[in-house]
Length: 392
Ligand SMILES: [Ca+2]
Image (cartoon, rainbow, N blue to C red; front, side, top):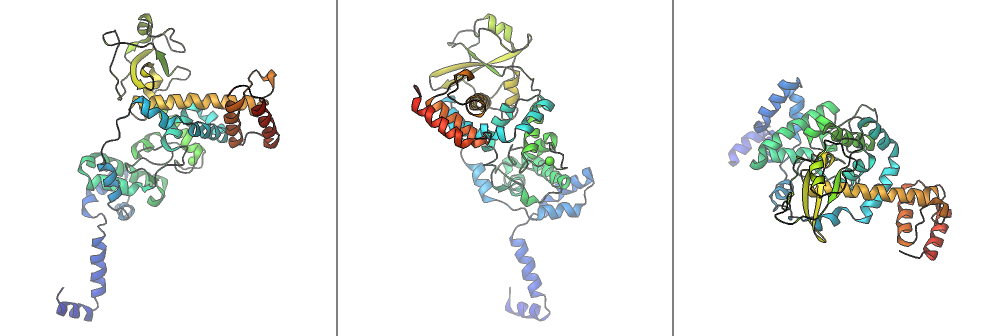
C-alpha cells in the first residue's frame, strides 16, 4: 500500500478497520463457497441463515486432515496381521470392565433392541478402546476441509457437513465440543453425521443424543444401529468351516470386502463344510469367508448377523475381529464372575476352578470392574490360588 494512501487512511481513521478486514480474509474463513450449502439447508429445515453462517465461521482448512487423507492406503492386512491388533488381553479385560460398569444400560439395550451386550461392547472396544481414543480433530474442520479443499471427498464432505450442521442445530451443540477422526467419524461409536441423524438415540432420557460423553446414549445408539440393520437376536454370527482347496465347491479366494449371505446354510451343511447349522434359522443363508490366518487358510461361514456387523464397517476382517473380541469378552467375564465375583477360585463346588494365569486375568478384570465387594479378601484367595496352581 503506498505510503501516501496509508497517511490519508490513517487520517480519516479507517486504516485500523481496513487492516482488520484484510487480516480476517487471510484466515480464509469459509465465505462464498459455502453459501449454496447453507442456503439449501436453511431452505430445507427452516433454520436462520445467519445462525448457520455463524456456526461455520470457525471452520478452517486443516492440513492435518489433508495429510491424513493423502497418506497411502492402510497396510493391506491379512487376518494374521489384523487379529492381534484387536484381540489383545488389555482390550478384552477393559471390555469386561466396561460391561460391568455399564451393565444396566447394556441390559436395557438388549431388552429394547435385541442386541447382546458383548457385541455392543466389542464394537465400542474396536472403534475407540471404549471411548478412550475417539480422535481429537474438530469435526467441523474435518468435514469443511473434505467438502471444499479435497476434491476426491467433495461429495461425501458436503453431505456430511450439512448433516453435521443439522446436528449442531438440533442438539444446540457448540461446534468445538464435537471431536472425532480426520474422516469425520464422531465420538465413542465413531458415527459419521448421517449415521448420527439416522441412528443415534437419547438412551438416558436427558433430551440429548450425546455420543461423546454419555455412555448410555452410546450403548443405545450402537444397539439401535444394529437393530435397524436387521440384527436377529439369538442367531449365530459365524461358524468355523472345514478347510477348502482350490477347485472344491464353495472355495473362494481371500477377500476383505463383505458380501451378503447368499447360499442356503442347509446346502452348505449338506456339502460337508460345516457339521451342524447351530443356532440358525432353517432358511438361513451364509457366505463363505476365507482368511489368511496365523496357521494358514481359515474358512468361516458368515451368517446374517455377521453381515450386519459389516454394515458398521464393510470389511470381513473388521467383522471377525468384533465377533471374536465379543466372544473373548463374554468368556472372560463369565470366568471372572464365577471365579471371583461369585465364588472364590478355590471353591471346587463352583464347578469352575481357575489357577495361575487364568485366575490372574479373571481376577484383574473383576477388580477393575469394581464388581467385587471384598478386594482385600479376594487378593489373599488369589495369592493362594497362584501358589497352589498346577497349570497356567
Ligand atoms: Ca442422552
